[in-house]
Image (cartoon, rainbow, N blue to C red; front, side):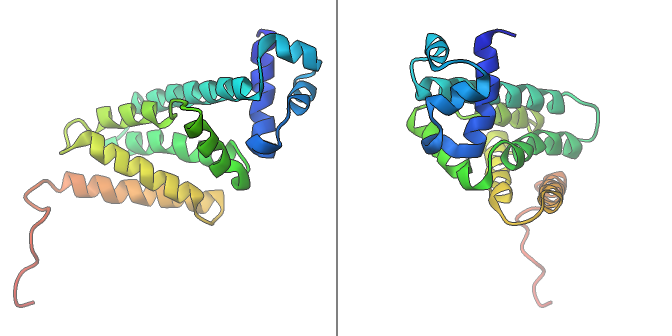
Length: 186
C-alpha cells in the first residue's frame, strides 16, 4: 500500500471520531504516522483528504453492494444484503454525532454520493418490479432512516430485515392484489 493509501486509511478513522470541523491536518498527520509536510506532499488541504476518504468509502460500499447483489439466495435476501451495506456503514463508519455533519460536508463539496452504486445494484435486483429505480430509492431512504433511529445495532438490523420482508412480499403479491379496495360492508 502506498503512503497516500495509508493516510486515507488513517483519515477514515479520524473523520469518523472527530467529524469534519474538528479534524485538523495535524490530527491527520499524527494518525497516519507522518509529518505535516509529508501529509502536504500528498494532499493540498483537509478537503482533499476528505474527498479521498469519501471516494474510498464509496468504492468499498459499491463493491460490497455488488457482491451482495450477485450472491446466491432469494431476491429478498439479496436486496437485504445490498441495503445492509448501507446500514452497516451508517452504524459503523462514523460516530452518531458526526454522521450528519460528514454527509452534509460531502454534499457541500459536490462529492458523488455513495448511494449511487447501491441504487444501481438495487435497481438491477428490482428490474422486474414496477418502477425499480424509484423502489430502490425508497428502500435506500428508509434504510438511512433506520440507521439514524435510536436502538442497538441488532435492533436496527432487525428493522431493516422486517422492512425488506414487507416490501418484497408486497411486490410479490402482484399488481392484481395491490391497490385493491377492501371489500364493502365488512
